[in-house]
Image (cartoon, rainbow, N blue to C red; front, top):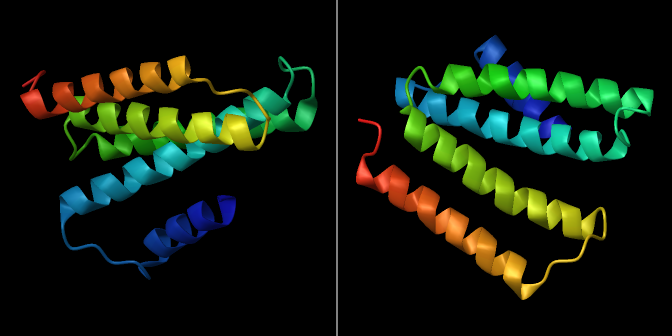
Length: 131
C-alpha cells in the first residue's frame, strides 16, 4: 500500500501524472489521505499505546501525511463531501483490515452499524448539507 502512495506522490511531484481538472486532483489527494489514514491506524494499533517506537513514528508520520492531503483535497472538494468520503471509505477499509490483519471479530451488529453510518454520510453528502 505504501508503494502506491509513494508512486502517486512521486508522479504528481515530477509531473509524470498530469491531471487537467483541478477537482480531480482534489479527489486524488483525498485518496492519498485515506490510504495514509489506513496506514496510520494500522501503525497506531501496532504501537501498543505508543509503547513501541517504530510503529509510533510510523503512525505520527502517516497521520501528518493524511491530514496534509486531506487539507489539500479540501481546496477543491467540498468539506462535507470530502469528510463523508474520507470517513466512509476509511471506516469500511479499517474494519476489513482489523478483521484480516488483526483478527478482530466482526458480527452482524457491527456490520449493521457501519452500514447505518455509511448511509448517513451518503445522505449528508447528497443533501447538500453545509452549503
